[in-house]
Image (cartoon, rainbow, N blue to C red; front, side, top):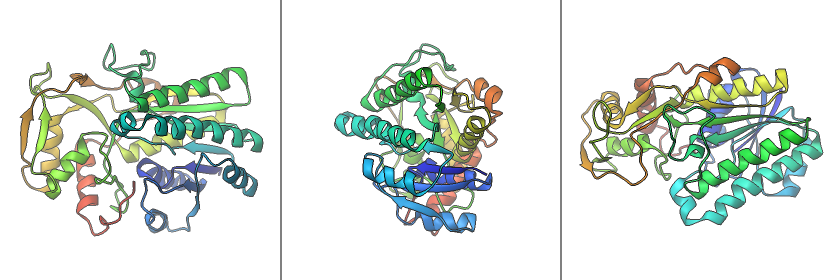
Amino acid sequence: MASILLTGGAGYIGSHTYVALCEAGHQVTILDDFSNADRSVPQRLQQITGAPVRCLEGSVLDTKFLAGVFAGQRFDAVVHFAARKAVGESVEKPLDYIETNCQGLITLLRAMEQAGVFRLVFSSSATVYGIPDETPTPETAPRRAMNPYGFTKIAGEGILEQLGQNDPRWAFGTLRYFNPAGAHSSALIGEDPSDIPNNLMPFIARVATGDLPELAVFGDDYDTPDGTGVRDYIHVEDLAHGHVLSLQALLRENESHLVNLGTGRGYSVLEMLAAYSRACGRDLPYRIAPRRAGDVPVYCAIPDKARALLGFQARRDLDDMCRSSWNWISGPHAAGKSG
């Protein structure tokens, strides 16, 4: 059993990773400022795990606070989610994103160094590929910043690379994930559709709940089987398991790795819509809209490296993602959602 600090652990992916880490036998402490997470999440996590949740409220930008966190408990590693994550908002507030995502990472690393903790799993994103030259996309594809959010993830990866190459004490698991979707099987935690959506499923969920009259499908003339864009969606519980495998590899081997976390299987907009229609029991309306600038026909991961290095294999399919999402947003707990 390892002692893990989970920054941003009350958020969407962080909360699911908390459950996965606990199930794997680790002792986990959440650190979150609740700027993008519901305060009921720790209570929900206690319901799922059947054990008290240790949760510290504060910011990764707060040097004094972080020093106190590491002074108060010995950690074996950190899993780092605490960051701003909305692409559109990053264009409106670039300095906020650079400060939180880059300076927050540096402040955390400095606190870790002072405490003698040198293993970190880093939440990165396929956004670092920009518009990729090839798809499915390997980890060797060039990194391109298409927006401030993408820039902060590239910068974060660069910081870790420089640190790891020049100080052998450090080991990092850098995880580039594609499109997280779905919710926990308990329907107690999931993605909050009231947030700024970062992919397709929250928009479809809004149509299913009646908050949107129809789904706008941007383009139906791509070179894909049904003409609509194809993306690699990964169930959030599979994604959480990937973080556990990354952490365990760091603890076991103390060597850095950088991998895609995806399924390698793309689903089109219309396939996603049909699967969500099956999940909620009615046909969901849509309209075809013009293509959006910058959209590519297909965007999928090559997940082979994660399988080889970590033993990672996504186990859940599109129907699982849609059913779990619908159970979450239509269930009795949907009023107070995780961020």
